[in-house]
Amino acid sequence: MFVPYRPRTILNKGKRPDHWFWARYSAYPYIGCQHGCEFCYCRERKYLPHDDVDDFAHVIKVKENAPDLLRKALARQPVDLLFTGDYQPAEHKFGISRKMLEVCYDLGFPVFVLERSPLVLRDLDLLQEIDQRARAVVAFSIVSTPDAPGYEQVRQMERLAPPAGKRFAAMEQFARAGILTGTCMMPILPGLCDGDATLESVIRWTADHGGQFVLAGGLTLADQQRDYFFRVLGERFPDLVDLYETVYPRGSYGSSRWKNTAMRVRELCEQAGIPDRIPRPIIPGDKRSLNRRVAEALANRVYTMDLNGEPGHRVWAYRKASWAIEDLEQEVGLVYRTLGLKGLASIKNVGPQLAREVELMLKEWMHDKEVAGGHSGDC
Figure 1 (cartoon, rainbow, N blue to C red):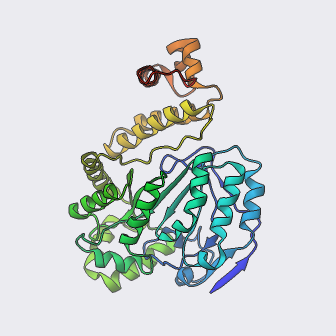
Figure 2 (figure 1 turned 60 degrees about the horizontal axis):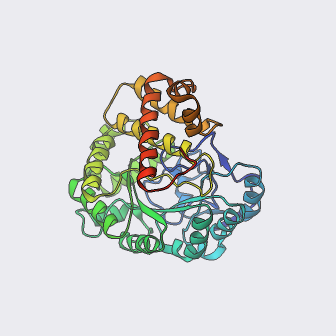
Figure 3 (figure 1 turned 90 degrees about the vertical axis):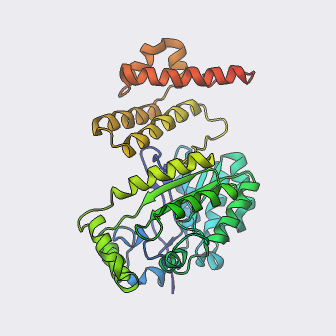
């Protein structure tokens, strides 16, 4: 059942881009999803305004004024990456995702689309235009492959989502079109798709289909979604209930178990020659593109430190330094050329030690530009 309505707002805003997808904004055309994946975190109360959690896959709220709201909202915001798009079957009927992409193109906003459906190929032409003007990233949510052990069990948990093979075929078309694409292996399900054979297969399929990254993420279970998921698990895979009770005890939001899996994903990605992080898209002509690159490098360091279990205070020091470079109004290369290492160290939350790391980054990039035979205003 479709329930058209007219919300008062559409745009979610962050103070700065997140360190997973590099999106600062998000806006979505629908609430609820006909795919109905059993593990979807969008069943949590803060995302799902339905009284009955079972309505998630059957009662789809359609934001019929979403494009107009988005145009008004983005017109007042600085340009940055927008997480948008929803290509569930409702999009065939309403076409709101495409209209929202048209707004992004008109206003010069880059976009990030994360999908389980090849229907996104319908808008390949528009996404190419956005990519040429501002950048576009199209990632596919895939946690198993047709030749992986237990694939049919995973398909039971994905319900009506299109088969993984079709998602990989769509990925290949985006790669051929020159658009940054890859796999978000989210959520990795213990006992179902966290085995080494499955991880290796997903990464191999990604590389073989032109994917340029595999980002691993764990399952999150909160409030009513946790109750729903455990009910489904008990009905379909009762032998896994004890495992999930141990890994996801009540009151916990996520699990540290996925970190071991993420480390294995990193090893396998290195073997396949692709990163386990999403390369940050840089908007053409961005005067602070070097700041974005430094912030990205520091954020990736945070991810590595977190996986390695390094002390929390060190992890936070790098995270705050990344935010500081992100928020810096001056171009960081200019700060370094003008004031040297002391200038970098004077940036709030950077300090002498991290300033030396930033200096090494800048020197390396400047050297690369010299080797390439050109000069850029970045450094």
